[in-house]
Amino acid sequence: DAGVTQSPTHLIKTRGQHVTLRCSPISGHKSVSWYQQVLGQGPQFIFQYYEKEERGRGNFPDRFSARQFPNYSSELNVNALLLGDSALYLCASSEETYEQYFGPGTRLTVT
Amino acid sequence: KQEVTQIPAALSVPEGENLVLNCSFTDSAIYNLQWFRQDPGKGLTSLLLIQSSQREQTSGRLNASLDKSSGRSTLYIAASQPGDSATYLCAVRGYNTDKLIFGTGTRLQVFP
Image (cartoon, rainbow over all chains, first blue to last red; front, side, top):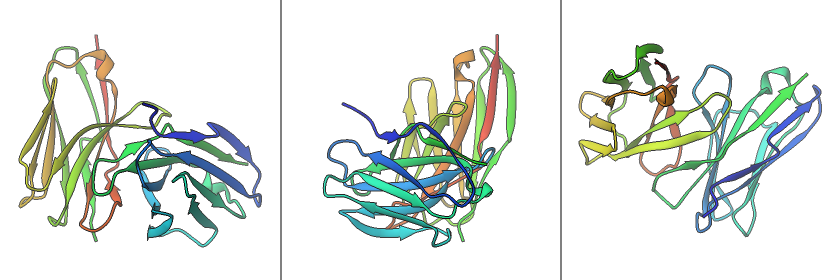
């Protein structure tokens, strides 16, 4: 079975631009969560979606938004990019209340 | 507010050694605890999941224990190998949420 997939793998953006990151969960998983991992730190929770509804939001500014589609895939959008948004963005999926499985991540570099 | 700490931050050992990685958390009201492995620049690979009602879990050379009352978990790696070199992260999950709170990890290097 395919694991969690994310696209793109890498991207480079300029300050002030907008970016969209995509995630496809493991088949059958209805919960998707997004995390930001800055170099040398543990991942920080951004959002969780379950059945297309937001279930949790971390301490991130309104420039960060997300949505989940009927097929349970998800997008993370970041507006007005700052240098500090450079990080590895991780997506995780799970069946409700069970173990979370992470994708390979998207490396975002903001210049 | 839940905080997760991992000690040591880095560890370098010769091949074959048995080693212990530590994870502590400040709020004992956790639903479960997961240990992950992360290779440089890559995503997270789940190693072991311990539910709050469990004391330990084992997978191959890995054994994780959980002491909720003292807010501690340990990951024991037996007979370490160079292929075990990676960063090991622990994360706790509270009730009624999928949110994981991570420690900053232990960077392990096993040399031949």
